[in-house]
Length: 110
Image (tube, rainbow, N blue to C red; front, side):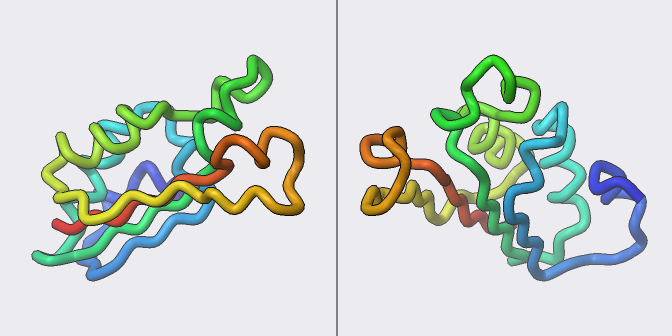
């Protein structure tokens, strides 16, 4: 089963956690609505993915969502955004990571 078929499940969830996977979803708004539909009231959504700054190269453009798609999709679906985190620890990173965040995480609640 593809993760985009989540609405087909006959289950309700309290928590959905994604680490470096949701950026493969082509239409994030629709996917966010489908996730929202399978949450219990108060359900929590935690998403971690590479920051769009890092994935904005031509080679990876098909596997990214800019922040307004990521966050806007969650808000349009009905989620309440509780926290946003961009990593800022540039020590020991590649040259880009020294100056720009490489990952972004959002925490939202139904």
